[in-house]
Each structure stands twice: as C-alpha cells, then as structure tokens.
Image (cartoon, rainbow, N blue to C red; front, side):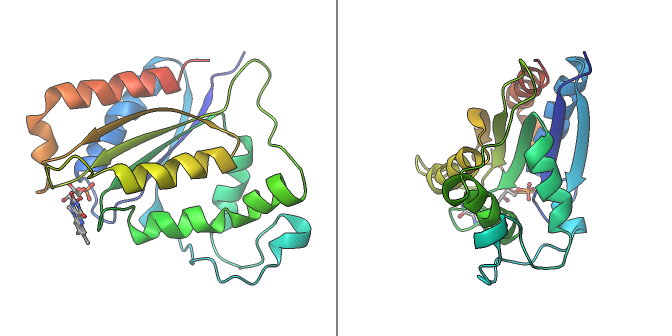
Length: 194
Ligand SMILES: Cc1cc2nc3c(=O)[nH]c(=O)nc-3n(C[C@H](O)[C@H](O)[C@H](O)COP(=O)(O)O)c2cc1C
C-alpha cells in the first residue's frame, strides 16, 4: 500500500514563523511514519475570498478563476490535512479564512447535492491543526478552533488533534518550547499513520 497522503498548509504570511515551525515538525513526523507529504505556503497562491456568486449551488464547483482548484482537488482526495495558523484577532488569518470560505462549494456538494467525499479504503480522512498565538489567555484559540472544526466537518474529515501554543509572538519564540515542537512531531506522526 502507498503511504497516506498528507497535505500540510502553512497559512501565515510570515515565512519561517512560529506556526510554520510547528508545521515543519509535524511534516517530519508524518514523513517518518511513511506518509506522502505535500507542504504548501498559502501566501504563494492567489485565493480570493468567496464572492457569493453561488455558481457552486448547481455543480458543487467554484466559478471563481484563481488558484483555488489546486486546493479543491486535494481537499477531495488527500487522506489527511494539517493546517498551520497563527491567531489573528482571535481567529484565523484572512488568508486561511478565504480558503475556508471557498469551501462553500464543498459544503454545497455535501449538504445540497448529497455527495460525500469517499475515504481511501481502510484510511480514515482526518484533519489536524497547529497554531501559535501571542496572548496568554484561556480563550485564545476558541474562535479559530470552531472555524477549523467546521471546516473539517464540511470536508468529511474527523478533527483528530491539535497543538496550540500561546505566549509566542516574535519569530523564533517557538524554539523556546521544545516540548510543544515535540508534540507537533507526534501529531504529524499520527497524521501520517494509516
Ligand atoms: C494581525 C495580527 C493579529 C494578531 N492577533 C492576535 C490575537 O488576537 N491573539 C493572539 O494571541 N495573538 C495575535 N497575534 C500574534 C500572533 O498570533 C503571533 O505573533 C504568532 O506567533 C504569529 O505566528 P506566525 O509566526 O506563525 O505568523 C496577532 C498578530 C498579527 C500580525
């Protein structure tokens, strides 16, 4: 059997930042588990926000012409997604929200057109989150978590784990938290395991 297909998406516009460092550790874990991993930087793609043209209502496909089809094709076919998000204004960054909102076409497929996304035989579809925020407060990840759980539900993926750390702000702060990086590695290993 081929390795589990994992799509790892870094949504921060800051390259090499805290959430991307967590993602990189997760990618290492997934590769070590034998997975086939594709890592992408969302900021390198043109993904418009949803424009509510509602073209997807009949077809389940988005009518906006940009780079979204790259993600659409993978969202329907990969076994696992690991999304890395910094916390922006208590939620996901605009880049990540645009991508999530564009999955309205997948919502239409699922709930209106009644088309489920088939899992690979014997391999469950699962979604994961790694996240970094600056403020040490109990609710730092609440909003972001709700968005991500609904995103994965729409994609017919079980939300299977997260590693979230607060109190990290400057680039490189995450390196002071080896246990959290280790937790991200374990998350990736789980994501990469059938
Ligand atoms: C526009 C913006 C909004 C932010 N809002 C929050 C916030 O609401 N809560 C928080 O804890 N941190 C907030 N932060 C801090 C980032 O979450 C933090 O610096 C994080 O480590 C950045 O991750 P990155 O290096 O992966 O981009 C904000 C940062 C920016 C640039």
